[in-house]
Image (tube, rainbow, N blue to C red; front, side, top):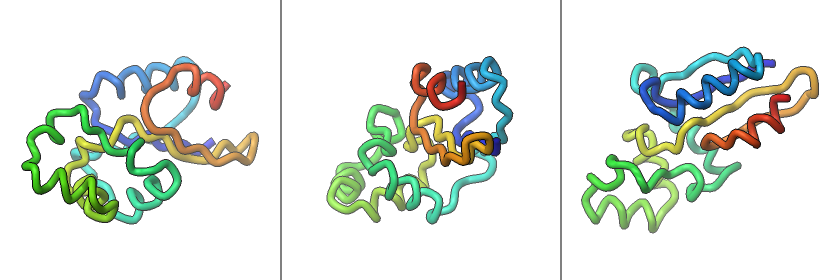
Length: 123
């Protein structure tokens, strides 16, 4: 099983996800947006599969700090929203869990922490 969890180390939701993966004995690599950033192509792939509505965290302080023209541009055009996510990784809903379940030959792409979904996918 090759799994990568993307996010920010200090996020409380990330800590729940780390704990759950550890409890389920899932090995994973951690990609820290603050240290490593994220490539636009990766965000584009996630948005293509999950949708921008699921990916873009409008509840956080980073979104609230944007000026109205930035918010309107993101709402009007998905490419603008993707650019904002790459520039402001704090606005990507956390965690993103991506990888391959080798024992089931199954691709995984999860956005956000849902304990029951983690149980279903990784048990």
